[in-house]
Image 1 (spheres, helix red, strand yellow):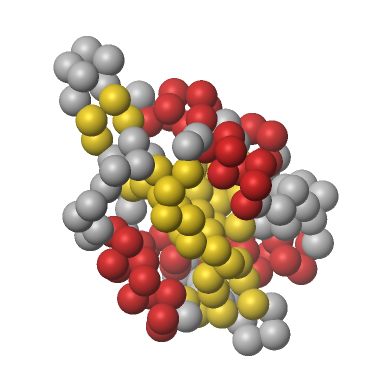
Image 2 (tube, one colour; image 1 turned 120 degrees about the vertical axis):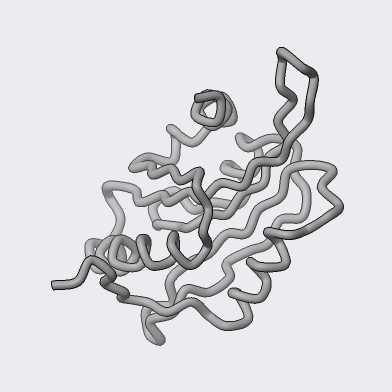
Length: 144
């Protein structure tokens, strides 16, 4: 069996949006694209685009469901303490809460690798509990 299993395809409009997001020139703060699986059509579709938010903690609390999986492409403003240089690393985050619907877990897990390859993002993180997704956690991962 191939390692390139694909359960859900990426919505073409979302694919274009993700490409534009990746090469956005006017980075001034944190931004994110939150994606979900459309179970009926077996597609990864846009759940929400967030142009600017103060902190990862705020984004998690206000925009992510606690018992449903999500894919997130996130650009976060990082000020490097040693040089005071500012960067905007691009991250791909997969959240799959333990207590979510098993069918949904399978659809998300089966689509993750192909989506990750499609996005071509090297900073990839996976979480099983939404409570673990904090700005402190993310910044510690990006610091490695």
